[in-house]
Length: 125
Image (tube, rainbow, N blue to C red; front, side, top):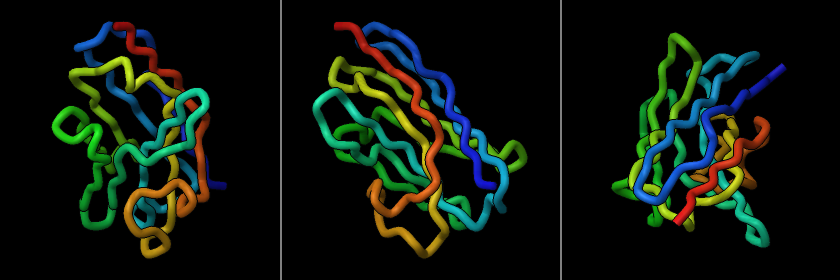
């Protein structure tokens, strides 16, 4: 059974940093892409950053480029999202999700079928 466990959210002041973690189990890590998505109140879920654990390719939404970095530790089957220079508009529930390599193109939530629980990120201005 594919399981994803997200953690690391919290309350931070604007300009601060947080690191989210997503630990996977129940599947071969290299066979899947893993992404971070977020949903703010009243808004649709959007792709923030995605990573192919197979070839290491990454995707970042324009709004987070230069501030967020996605990485993975294959030995721990964990994908991280380092978030720096946080802004109030980054406030949202952040979710990690996985998709079979080849089943997704870009970083769109509708391509990802395995989801972890969300973790709240609140940035105070």
